[in-house]
Length: 118
Image (cartoon, rainbow, N blue to C red; front, side, top):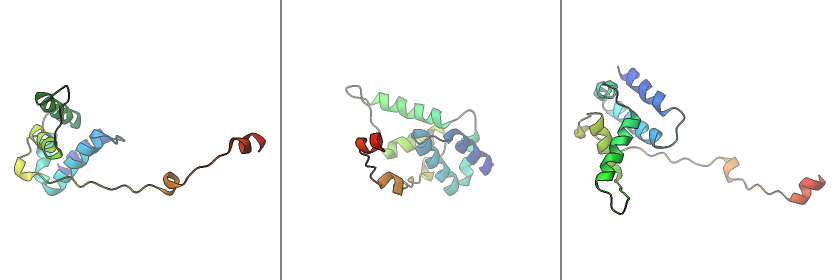
């Protein structure tokens, strides 16, 4: 059941590097810390996208001047509530620092004359 829940999350995350990855990674960490939460993730038609919609709905309730903001703790608590994972099981997400590759940090300097004469 644990692997099925993990596969469901990984399939939905796909190649997304936005909110699906952040919420999906958080839920994967929940699975690692609390394997019993696999049942809740597999229950019904629950999805990462649905969890994001639940977060948006809560942010709309508290919006001021057209902007609603949630803290990380509030947002992740809503995700857990959406999946019916008990709050006592909350673990903070582990954020990974991504170091830039050499290609990303190497300055690329091209002279137009070199290109035209070369």
